[in-house]
Image 1 (cartoon, helix red, strand yellow):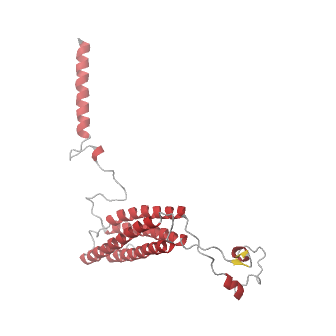
Image 2: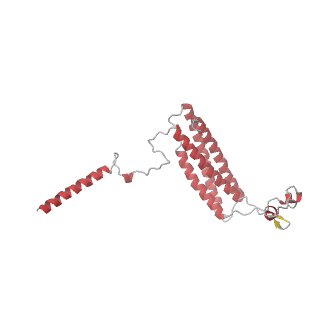
Length: 232
């Protein structure tokens, strides 16, 4: 009989414990922790007001991302502008000038008109598919990062009204140029499918990306200047 009473008491205790755990695991909105979105350290929660110091850090981090986009687009331009080395008297110009172990200054005189004429680049080489794919894929990844970082830019709560207006105008300009980059990326994805490559068009489109990133960075600088100078 005592054993049965003990088992009943234990069951009641377990039920109470489970009920307490269930209530504790539920927040004020009635959602369990599994229902909540994962917190990202680089994105402020929606109810957090961003001050000037925080926004300055966002803009500085954004500069690093923009530079990476520019470098990737530059690598694409370089890939479609590779030239074969020009021969100098049946010798590779690299051997004749750079790899001369004796440093014969007369033979490598840069003012020799014959040698200078031979320094002209050889024929244009076809783009390499593997490097086009790598750069375009990287550009796609960076574009996603840029989109997220632009979304977290907002006028600081403690900035003057005039500064906020300038900030908003520059962010609008950044969005506009970013839309151009997205369109350029779509075009590059089509141009690099192969098997034939239009090197001129790839280079032009990649250069358009560079132009837009430079414009974005100028807007970023003006937004940064508008909201504060004391943290720079």
